[in-house]
Image 1: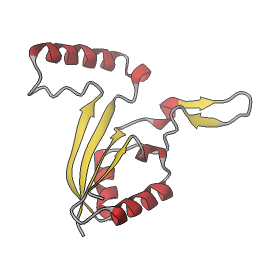
Image 2 (image 1 turned 135 degrees about the vertical axis):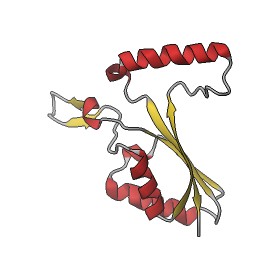
Image 3 (image 1 turned 180 degrees about the vertical axis):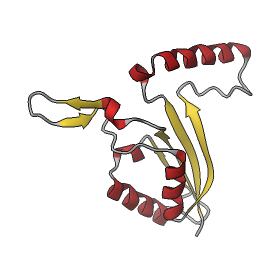
Image 4 (image 1 turned 45 degrees about the vertical axis):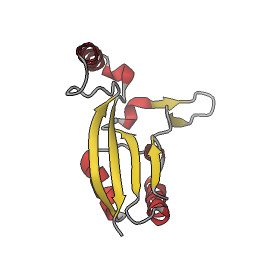
Length: 136
């Protein structure tokens, strides 16, 4: 394949499965092919743990098993033979301040302010976007 997209996927995999998935993605990509995706950034997994009173099971509200920091992502991809082209830290609002029109800038700052005030309610709201290239 020329491209593989894994948007909001990797955080649902345990350590062993994520390793196996990246090995398989590396295998099916053509030389020079791209892995593109997103994962939540700096999520505190414990903030969204739920408890089922009927069966006693605890689980993450969205099924997340991983929390990512930029250095860990870089290490994970490098270990599996990928060349990192870009890892970008984005907010939910997705506005690029250097290219947004004035109204979007105002919406962004209002949204960011509300997020900072209410972050426990809206977490996770930050993502890492990545572009990774198959080296060999």
